[in-house]
Amino acid sequence: MKQLISAFAATLTLAAPALAQTYAITNGQVVTNTDSGILESATVLVRDGDIVAVGAGIEVPAEATVIDAEGGWVTPGVFAPYSQLGLIEVALEDSTNDQAASESPFSVALDVTDGFNPNGTYIPTHRMEGVTRAAIYPGTGHNIFGGQGGLVSTSGEADSVFESGSFVFVDLSQSGASRAGGSRPAAWAYLAAALADARGYPGRFAGDHEGDALNRYDAAALLPVARGRVPLVVQINRAADIRRAIRFQEENAPVRLILVGATEAWMVADELAASGIPVIIDPLHDLPFNFDSLGASLQNAAHLDEAGVTVAYATLTADGYFNARLLPQNAGNAVANGVAWDAAFRAITLTPAEIFGVGDRYGALAPGYAGDVVVWDGDPLEVMSAPTAVLIDGEPTEMESRQTQLRDRYINITDDTPFAYRD
Image (cartoon, rainbow, N blue to C red; front, side):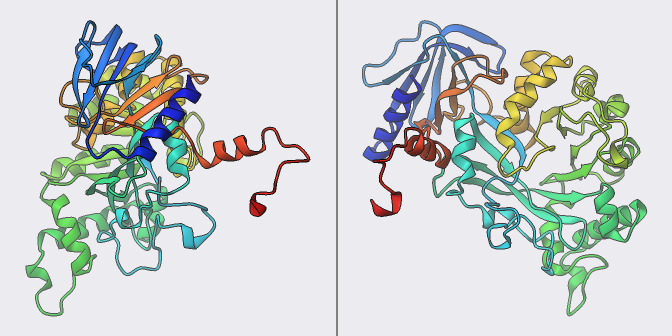
């Protein structure tokens, strides 16, 4: 079936139809991520890029192209809430690394989507593993701010960036403290001064004056955060630092925080739940990789879930430019350590979309949602399961990557196999 779907998608790509198509994914175990739950032997109908119907007994229009799930699982696309997808090709080759700008005079003003490459070779490998959407992050440079992140699809199309300036990233962990002058008090003081600069923009920057922490361009970029229009994503792990972040949000309304890392969040789960601050964690963080994470636990996700904290999963233990595709495996491990299956699956689909304000468009299978649909040959949280078809914005995508092309070329090599450069 995988070969048939790949050939089918390739044909569609070559044909490049001028008009949008209607697709019916039939005979599937459909995970809706809605109150409808999981539907047996159901159909997902996609027209003009959007889902128009989901359920059992749906009449398939005559003009629809049918994709038979053959009893497999049908789900929304995976949403990676933390990645450097499309920003890095070779991490140690600076010319292919647009994640961070350590020598730039700017920080908050840097928009990482300006460096996103939809033709990056790691994008197809993620798409083939069911990842259809991702939040892409900048790395920090000369201060605690990395810049602005954005939201992208893995379609590989020129318009893959569907939202820029989605959030501002700041590092207030151990590494951020070192950038701010060597201590956490320095990092928090820098953040406070930066917010004051933003609130004072543009008046504070009249004439040739600059801010206490930021230049005028960075202050202008931070102003949406100060006004609560754009969230501030804070990299943080230690329980004491999380408590400080909770207090910071209370003292600086309408600033909205999202925590990423949050290794010791389980220690302050009730306080986090009361604050309403969402967290992005790696459920596989189980060892203290530095002094910020001495309390790392495989039960972090379960404790947070039980307390009612909004939780999304990421792959923070691996390189985010090529291993965000392992999200379903991480979610499966969360299930093995006490999280309910539906909660774990939601944490890699609908919840990330909700955290970034697009949960009414992505992460569920329901009328009005984008046609991001994945057909799996088994339980998507089982490590041996794999997608057999992936639709993004209602169009089937190629199930092919550079790795599969190399595999197919050399899997049956013989003495008569021609050299590629002589073809």
